Length: 179
Picture 1 (spheres, rainbow, N blue to C red):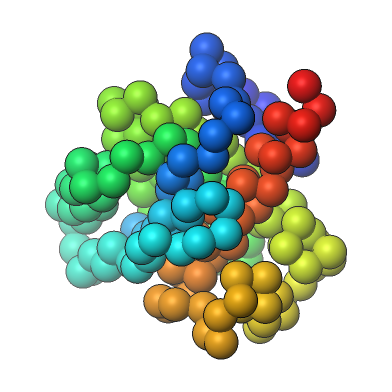
Picture 2 (picture 1 turned 180 degrees about the horizontal axis):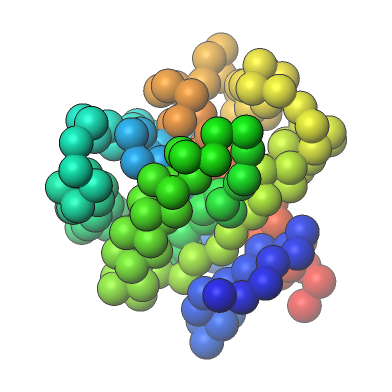
């Protein structure tokens, strides 16, 4: 697995960033809930939501996540995917489920030949709020202001996915301008 820095890591280095933005799929991976958001033109939320799995054996839950991702990819013409990097927080047991969900998502995106970029949670917060240690409330307020919405649609997982997609849209603009 490539090492990561504060810049995104591309899993598809053979497909460089293009000038057009197209649809960006932001994903907040999780075994219980995986948030997703489709962002057009770097600021317009086309669709968002959460894939919720019921407690039980991991294989069935991962299959549901993979199937839902395949359904999203079949309905929308996604140009790039952006995921949150794996974060080792206080709850060490949940990281295993998140890692498994990420694996299912990365495999699905690779099968669909969608280039994937990853961002650290602190990078997402920093790009959206200017402060890498911002809390969920601060991130939500800034996101709603920047997207010109009264309220960010969906639950916390969908909101995180929107934030990841916006982070990628802004990062890619800078990368394209730097070329």
